[in-house]
Image 1: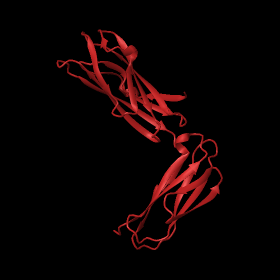
Image 2: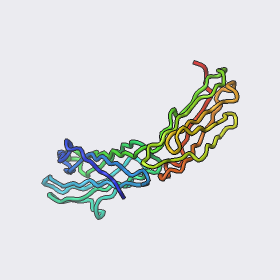
Image 3: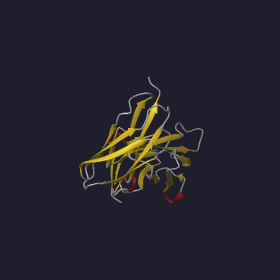
Image 4: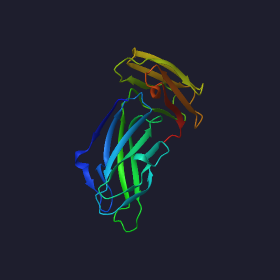
Length: 223
């Protein structure tokens, strides 16, 4: 798996009083947009003069699995290990920040909880702007436009548009094949408050996460 990892030099060799010393407490990861998971390792050493036990870990999300090398939880003074985080990226695009918490056993320790951070960047291959079109109740039902732009090294074609609501007419215009499109949306009426349309933009992107992108249209109260 092609993954680029950069650490913050300013955070290298951070020593947590009464805890484990992690070589890096923050890591930045750029992931190939076709990948569904990323694995990030945090190396640590027990620099204290007593045994330390990792009581529990938490990634704050079911999308994060945390493992400690060899399933080992107790580390003698001077002993080292690796904390590995496996992050599922299935539902993410763009930038993702995932904090990891590590708790050590022992009420006498000055630091029982230590926090690590993973900053993940998934390159945006398809952008949609604006993501949501809004008409006010009673407003003239004029067409509004969503711009669709491709940012991959190879062309990405919009294959079709699916609308959840026939009250919103959609028309796709190709400005530059594989690079730039416009989606024009026109409501049949703006009299019904709360009317909502979901527009699925289906593409032939090499990355599955960008093969179906949603945009929205709705009728809201006049402000």
